[in-house]
Image 1 (spheres, one colour):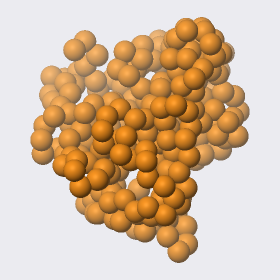
Image 2 (image 1 turned 180 degrees about the vertical axis):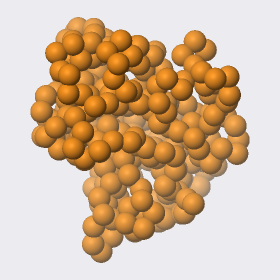
Image 3 (image 1 turned 30 degrees about the vertical axis):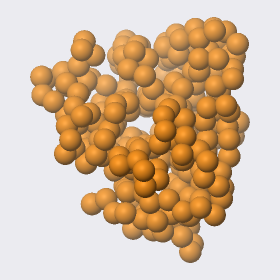
Length: 259
């Protein structure tokens, strides 16, 4: 059951012209409530904005006297613009934990595939499987890159891609996914987070090599608990599920990629 927690911002860092990273003192959301990377928090962005903003958990650390949680977000509108102006020492109202995260074992070798703001939720999986996983990170351009050094610290290899060729390989991440899976037979799962066209392509690449693929879907989530029905997505069996409540992580084979 999600609870409201008043969290103090320990540190606020601007990652690039569009993205910010906050570390929060989060009470016992990790120790007691089991919050983990891949889930999300609903953050209240000022009294003038009625709806909370869903922000994925990047890292979650059970600590004393209070747990620490790192979130990364991009400025997309008035609410996140308000949030970006908060400083260390400010307090935020957050609701969590919400959603379901990735499933993996600590000893698994993972292929982590992120696109844009879909990159941060995968950092927790890199930390959980420290020194065992490979990351493929895609960005529109070099100016939008984030967390690259964090992934390099935690992964055996980091492959960078950009749409315009200004960073790493010029092209889409699924090309690198196929290249890695063709050479590495030890990958237990592909974990992917990013825009739906990217997820569709990554899911297809993983299926070609018979590797399990989990995807974290990006949808507009107004309520965060499945009440407003705004984040409903169609599954391959014809049923409808809600990204906020049933996801955001699904098995790739569950999702209807044709809608």
